[in-house]
Length: 145
Image (cartoon, rainbow, N blue to C red):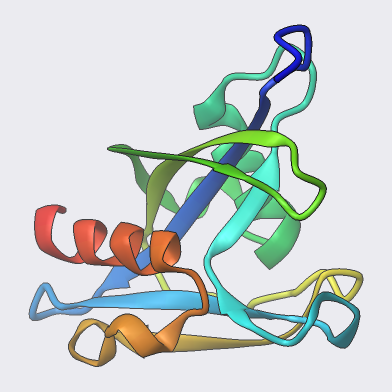
């Protein structure tokens, strides 16, 4: 292993809102055909010098059209994953959750995704997303926030 190789820093962001009964509804995005059509949370890479948390918020804005004034709060889920990506590079991915004040019209970035759906917390299970890391982050946000 070449210790000069940089660890790639990534984020995974769970986006959700609560209804009047305090139940949570989560946003999932489906990757486009070029990216193999699977359901996932918001994901992305850090820009040079960017913090994990600001990347989590920026990616949510870029991938959904979220505006800052609709953010209720941002939570560090204290959950991270280390893995090798498809290019065999070391990745460190940290997970965050953004609670929005209101459900909003999603504007997906079609270069990455082709569909979205809002999923009630009762429907969250292992099969709803492709990667176990996405499911673990959803479960943690569902249970702890």
